[in-house]
Amino acid sequence: MNIKPQLFLFHFAGGNCYSYSFLKEYLEECFDFIPLELPGRGKRMSEPLLKTRSQVISDLVWQVRTRRNTNVPFILYGHSMGAGLGLDIAKHLEQSGDPAQTLVVSGNAGPRVYREKKMYLLPDEEFKKELENLGGISSELLENDELYMFLEPILRADFEIVDIKDEKIPSALKSTSIIALMGTGEENAENIDNWRNYTSQSFTKLLLEGDHFFIYNHPVELAAQIKKAFGNIHSVSVPIAE
View 1 (cartoon, one colour):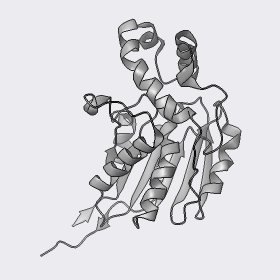
View 2 (cartoon, helix red, strand yellow; view 1 turned 90 degrees about the vertical axis):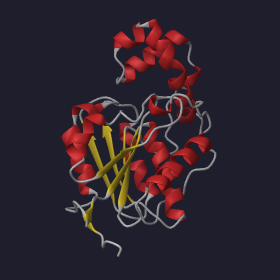
View 3 (cartoon, rainbow, N blue to C red; view 1 turned 180 degrees about the vertical axis):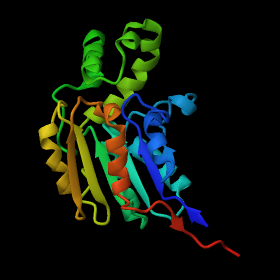
């Protein structure tokens, strides 16, 4: 029986399990496409938001372990907040004896590279302006009071995770390679090589034209990089238990 390798996806701040729907058509033929989701949004709307990094990492590690088919290889992908969390998750899985083949990260220059402003503490109007500068959220949504009031606490909770400096930075991954992508116009793009410090395996970097949410303009190239993580593997042959 042929079973596809698994692809676990971690969303960005304010995102949910639908954030990578634009990528699915390019990857679902090759991978078991598994977008994960934090509490307080999407299908987990009834659950309280998480506001500490340790809680978020524990939740996502639990989700991966729950969905893992240990007979097949897997890779991890995260954008922005999801990229930063991805390194911690990859380290946890490696230490548990089930390492990812590759960690693909985008929109994030890696640990110890911080933005100047703490987004989650900004006054409302400045917060909206910074969100607009980042891209990914339409001005129509930001101007709609009802929609904004719904989304704001989710965004602030997620940015609190992003903006508070890590107390403990994971050491370099021993078994998992890293592929890093950033937009040419986003903050800290010049620091993309920082990711090289966090793997003992191969490291690949790629800058693509665009702002922080360049991924929406380059779905084919992003999908190609994720596929490259597995070479030409499209499925894994697994014996059927008798």
